[in-house]
Length: 263
Ligand code: COA
Image 1 (cartoon, protein in one colour):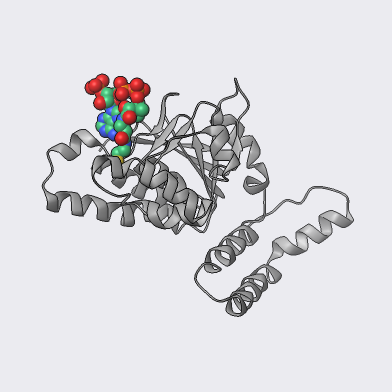
Image 2 (cartoon, protein in one colour):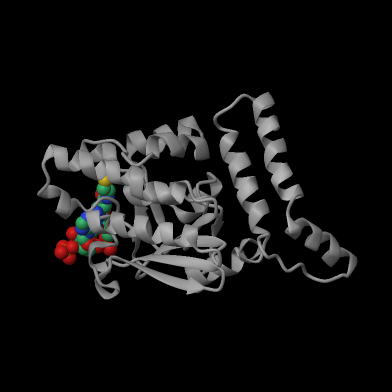
């Protein structure tokens, strides 16, 4: 597929790789090709030593992503849908497993698989007009890209049930109040520009420490506290051995900003 016709575009902004879901005529819905493109470009960014953070956003100002491509799905057999749901795991999973922080910049609605994609990300920033919802049960299905597992971890069981069983739509301020998004961009500012400014501490930060912190936090969901504390010690040790840690101490002594090399 040529880059021009790709349903997902890649832009590099310094140390940040920006993935843009680019099917505004279908409100950036997740087609089979879009899922493969996210996986392919996600792998490229994870492997690129220059990249320290990945931002995912949508083209236009209406939708971040309207979820599964319901038009494509109409022509699919039950088995085709099973395969497609498997692609959520394998292709979106690239972002889930990314050792580099992944941030969703929600430029509009995030519904169904679109919100699940945002939930795979480590941080979420919403435009003031964004709306978030998992409406699957109203369509006779359930969230199939991790929503039933990730949403309760983020907002708690009762609120997750409220969103999933009632198909409730949250506006950006409500999503902020529930902790479903970390930040709402100011009116009149592009959510992508706002996100890129907000994540400067990541883009200019120490990559080994960022990756170690992410892994330590994520492992905490799987294990009892005692083992979790041991895992934290192991991750801490990775940063102890890094050149970046010594650079931070030198920069502090010299009253300047540290320049991290990821070594
Ligand atoms: N899959 C495929 N096409 C979609 C789509 C989806 N999930 N969501 C929207 N589109 C298409 C519409 O069919 C329409 O195409 P058309 O111009 O050929 O009729 C186009 O995108 C614009 O949609 P429209 O509804 O006119 O835009 P809007 O800005 O007023 O509303 C949404 C956008 C996303 C709020 C609305 O389209 C919607 O609710 N879509 C369904 C989302 C959904 O239920 N997702 C969960 C799936 S589990």
